[in-house]
Length: 327
Image (cartoon, rainbow, N blue to C red):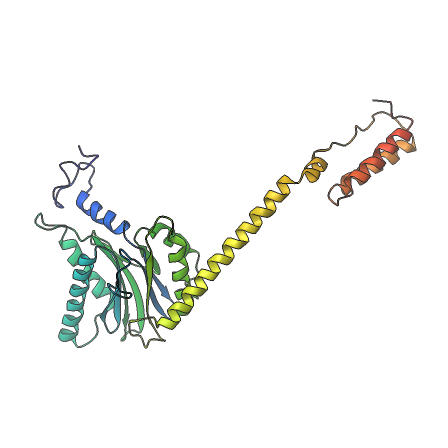
């Protein structure tokens, strides 16, 4: 009964004998089935990117955004159920506004992430509630300390600070690609292209529905305010990412064609498989030593393309040797 969750998935307050909370796992699965969201902390700011899946061709372009501004210096990208995500956005805005009214300064990134994770975790503690079917990536800047940070909040309520993170169906693939980047030198403009490239690589046009790429940043260029990337710059980076992917695919195809041509070349295969004539044994004259030299020359010529000629010379030298019949 415990292996399938039957009887233990009726409430988020019930643990299975293996120590699992199935409703939280189901909420995590809902996030994994949604579009990919990526966050990267760069040397000069933070970049957020989302693969917003278009469920219908009738949807207006730019509607139902999956990146939201929390306050002047913070923003959030999310994957999962849209209504749950809007609830998190509203709560985050309330927290940011409340902190500023109380203390007279912008809410620090770590405080915002901690309060949001506590709020999400609260919904896993009561039987009358259900866990949030959404995960969030929070980018924020603290003016007093002049520090930008990146956090990820999962449906279980746990949050971690990252240099790069991802949510959604392409989470693992995106994580692998992010690990290849040098985040200690990467700028936000460079990260825009990398985020677009990763999302396009992970998107399977044959299986997945069409999507719209959303990009936002919080950096020096934006005055440390969370804003959407200008449309012209976004289109430029997206086109550059697509071209880079196409170039990489063309190089791979050319390498595969070269390998196939080498494997299908009968003359080259025959030359590589043709054996040397047997070297006679026993004592011999100077002609025998000459034949040995011809054999060494044939071996050297095998890689230079004169293999057949060298073998003929070696065979003729053996025929002239008085010890050619000695084995």
